[in-house]
Image (cartoon, rainbow, N blue to C red):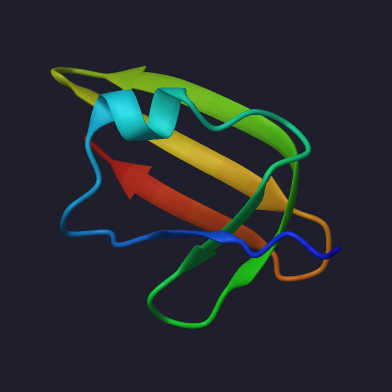
Length: 65
C-alpha cells in the first residue's frame, strides 16, 4: 500500500509540525512539490528558524518559522 505524502501549507506550518518530519517521510506543499525527504537542514538566523527539506526528485522545500 502506498503512503500518501503529508501536506504542509507554508502559511500554516508551525515548528512542532516541522520538527515531526524525519528523513524518509513523504511530504508535499501546496505548490505541487512532493517527495521523500533525503536530508533536513535547520539554520538559526536571528530570531527565525529556517527549515530546508531536501527531496529525492523535486528539489527543496523551504520554511521560515
